[in-house]
Amino acid sequence: MSQEKFDYVIVGGGSAGLTLASRLTEDASISVCLLEAGGPDKNLLIHIPFGLSLLSRLANLGWGYDTEPQAELDNRQLYIPRGKTLGGSSSINAMCYIRGVKQDYDSWAAGGAMGWDWDSVLPYFKKSEDQERGESELHGVGGPLSVNDLRYVNPMSRVFIKAREALGLAEVDDFNGKERRGLGVYQVTQRDGQRCSTAKGYLSLAKERSNLKVITSALVEKVILEDKKAVGVKFSVNGQSQEVHCQREVLVCGGAINSPQVLMLSGIGPKEHLKEKGIDVEVDLPGVGQNLQDHLDAIIQHRTNVAAGYGLAFRAIPGYIKAGFQYLFGRKGMLSSNIAEAGGFDKTKYANGTEDIQYHFLPAILHDHGRKTVAGFGYGLHICHLYPKSRGEIRLRSSNPADIAVIDPQFLTHEEDRKVMVEAVKLGRKILNSKEFDQYNSTEMLPGKDAESDDDILAFIRKRAETIYHPIGTCKMGAEDDPTAVVNPQLQVKGVEGLRVIDASVMPTLIGGNTNAPTIMIAERAADLIKESH
Ligand SMILES: Cc1cc2nc3c(=O)[nH]c(=O)nc-3n(C[C@H](O)[C@H](O)[C@H](O)COP(=O)(O)OP(=O)(O)OC[C@H]3O[C@@H](n4cnc5c(N)ncnc54)[C@H](O)[C@@H]3O)c2cc1C
Image 1 (tube, protein in one colour):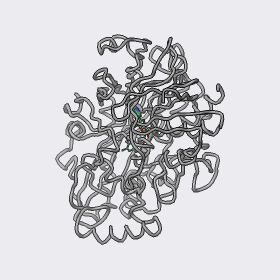
Image 2 (cartoon, helix red, strand yellow; image 1 turned 135 degrees about the horizontal axis):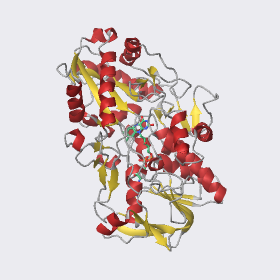
Image 3 (tube, rainbow, N blue to C red; image 1 turned 60 degrees about the vertical axis):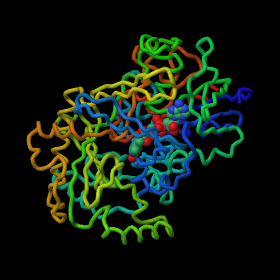
Image 4 (cartoon, rainbow, N blue to C red; image 1 turned 180 degrees about the horizontal axis):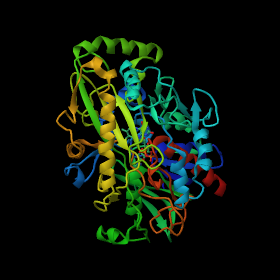
């Protein structure tokens, strides 16, 4: 391996990494080696959308991260799932297709990420997309990422949408359209009733190309630097250390937790922290690992005796057997559902112009991210604050690449975040307490009827809130003279030649929604930037 040289080495085969690998190797003169720490995406549960309900139990598909104790969340350590397989987190995510809004990207550009304003990024969203409803001003067709309408929507999700009337909200047909305030059914990244991860959408187009080499079960330990120039990476397979070299660039696509870890292990990061961990400092970049942002999520959970939704009970078994046949013979029915079928966007009284909260409705009882089994029937409304002001960080635990990084999102440390979450729970409760849900004669398990005052609701949030899986920001993109920026608007790491970071970690601030499509957009645009300079 050490003899072989590629133009580009990509670290990580997730949402961004596989998009990039596929686009770069469209040019037969460009050679790429991609290293992925996880294995191939062979598990059927990845591909059958309903399999999502069991993915968090499969240790071999994820990194198994937990945060540090969170002071504002009763010192709890929160589980942070991240995909560790081809497709990365796009192989384990909930498939909701959301881009965010114009203001999200315009504010990136205003903050120094020149060229990433809405008008500049929209063509890349469209380029990636294969929209089942056809082409339009805002949507593209023919791209590798299939965006489909759900083939099955549980009647309980329809009830949720109907309950919008309790808040005077509209029904929204396209959350990536012009107006998104309201409730509706999400479009999903699926093709033919199966998950469309980036392994399915992008890698499948490229994997037979002779100019692409993909190595799985390869943990990248560090970027090899010579005179502040990236010349390759050191990685291990089954504990055996190896190297691969590049003539052009190393492209780090490890995601918001691992990319800053790889940079710091390579001697790129906050000087004092690297020294403390016994790592030789190559480039003092204080922003590496800082600026961690994530969407915190509160779940209002109801239980019912009515056999409805996706329950776990003897009564539900015939329905699941029928669903098995429907899926087997037509990729239709319940098993094609992503479970988080419906949701929407709304404004609390703290909203600054655009919607500041997002709903995901699950016609099921979810406990501990699906890692624990709960018998019976029920439903839950997940509500997250889209624009938190709390900022956390990723640090090294040690200089050992096999050690998990220190993940400290510092959730709710900003007072305003606490206020928005309390308001969000109040709004969500109005929906679930509306007359539409009377038919289920349900009991509110969480927060529970005794939680009435704002203080009670905040106490519930502290006790129960979890991440809804959108960490970003730890290799922030910004202007050359921004001391907190890690990469410039070309995504090049400051102070190093031939090294870029391309994934969710470069987002300067959270977008108002789920982060898979925006990450793919980033990689689409990065592929063009790289090809231009090639
Ligand atoms: C459970 C869950 C549900 C979600 N639901 C949605 C949703 O419904 N809609 C949505 O839009 N978004 C959703 N997201 C978020 C979205 O999937 C992520 O934001 C997106 O996938 C991030 O892409 P990425 O390329 O930055 O990282 P990833 O896709 O995580 O890719 C990083 C890759 O790098 C590999 N890697 C890391 N370190 C190394 C190393 N040292 N050596 C080699 N390889 C390495 C990893 O194994 C992984 O494959 C969800 C995420 C999760 C976890």
